[in-house]
Length: 408
Ligand code: HEM
Image (tube, rainbow, N blue to C red; front, side, top):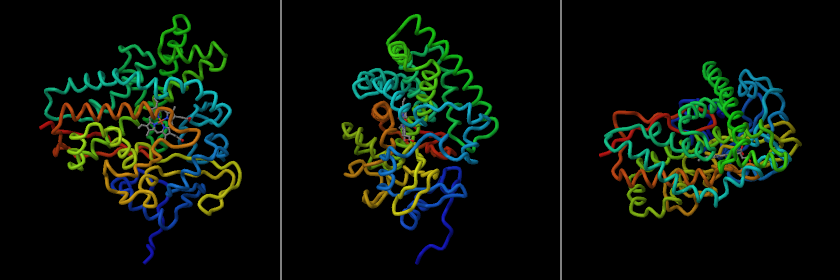
């Protein structure tokens, strides 16, 4: 018999809702089966739960990511906090072509597979250093001592940030992430604005220093591109560096945390992985499918179109549930089972189309190295029963606040 409950809307489809946080798939499965292109709220946003619809939306270059082109609505005002629309300068993440293509083109060289492969030995040394510091600890919170610092140290080194500035860099990274949380508190908005200003000042100085003396770091590469072709302004460089923090740090932390939790909750899979360490890259893909760090991304229709048989008007927003995409029974057999050797790990965890995650090779390398080094060092890790696993309350991200483990 059909479920007569009203369909969930807006925040009920995010981790701000306690029921969704604990068990998102009840709601997502129901929507996929009964209303896969779901009208979500008074602002007429659509919520998509079928893999194929989302793949088509993400591949469609006629759709926009530039929120300035959507009708100004309450959610966008909340996302901007106190910052007026005219004052928000979007990064490549929220620009359409030709600006998007120009900015992405300039940074992409640093993030291609070859450049990232060259970083692997260094990432391993950083991971091992963090684990060395845990040698005498019986119990630790994996997020704060390992999963969070690892990507921050790596990106700071890539940017050429002085190691003495790491603590500040980490604070900015955490505060800046509030930009993606429409439900942030006034205190978090204040922290965000302070972090933005400090970050801006710091990078203005760093860019000037690179003009004087060029190095081999990422900021130097961006400055060189600017000087060679007058194509990136100092402000664009700073916005791009800021994006790398927002887009890259928390997400990679969440991938490591969610992945380790999945392994510890599936001891047969963990035992398999420890016996077959060469399968770590495949296991990371299954982690991205099963419990992705970014759960929602959106596109704006600039013209009327159809999606999944439904009419979409110009100005309407389509939200893709990347969590639902990885659990679509049309694609994945027994989708809610975590299984490293499943044949069908296809996912949209890094998005798709023109905005496909620029940092995917780096995120994959960091997660693979983190998982491998952690279980090499601590083959019999367990969840610490004295601490509950705590999920973050963020609408677009999916991760753990803390993950307490016991080394037995
Ligand atoms: C597991 C970790 C990560 C996940 C799950 C992730 C996910 C995503 C997703 C879903 C998008 C597309 C957003 C959209 O289309 O609306 C994206 C874009 C992006 N990501 Fe990642 N990301 C991760 C790590 C990183 C890292 C490590 C970096 C770089 C340091 C990075 C840099 C970017 C950038 C620059 C974009 C914008 C690309 C564009 O607009 O063309 N990401 N990411």
